[in-house]
Amino acid sequence: MILNYWHFVTFGVVFLLFIGGAISSLKQDSEKMKYSMLFSVALITLFLAVFSIVVVDKYTKKVELYKLKNKRLLSTEQIIYTGIVKNEGKFPIGKVTFEIKLVNKGHATGNVKGGNFYKASGFMDFFTGGFGMAKTKPQSIVKEFVVARNLKPGAAKSFRVYFDYPPYFRSVAHFAKVYGH
Image 1 (cartoon, helix red, strand yellow):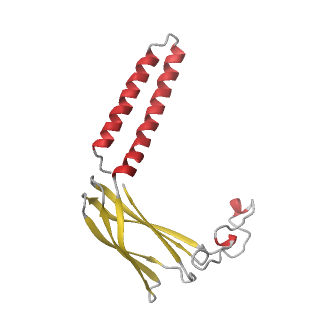
Image 2 (cartoon, helix red, strand yellow):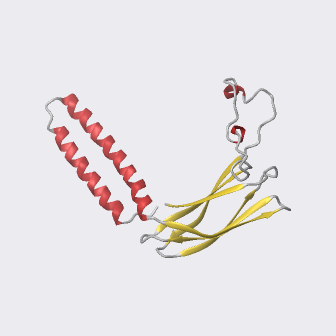
Image 3 (spheres, rainbow, N blue to C red):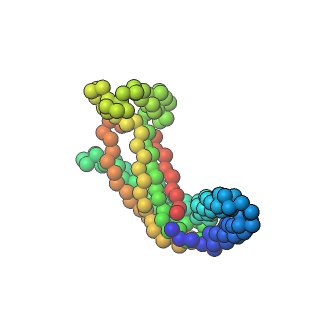
């Protein structure tokens, strides 16, 4: 993960909140109250620090996906996705993740059934692994790939990813996303 100056600004604000909370908790007369307030302030500022990293990353690291193409290799039962990821933001991105979701039938054909997304199970399935019936085949697959590292502002990088394509999939809908971290 690459930090930019906005990360350090938010860390500074969170640190000032921690100092202020620690000083006010140490001014308490009751020993019980001092330690419980200090613990609460530390926990809240830790939560704020982690949350601020996520928020700053979301709004400062912008990556776009261009020229996405897919091709099936029938001989090896694989699918290839190729494309280009580009850093559209003003800050470097440490890691670009490409996520592809394949959904069998349903969305692509307009034939949406509850069984495509939800398979009912009994309480004992949790403990036994099933009633000896055949395993159901998943109707959706989500794969994630790291396609670029240390992408500078304005830079673009082409990628190619392979993965096994389920042979029972027909009329598949493709949903692609990219994330910058």
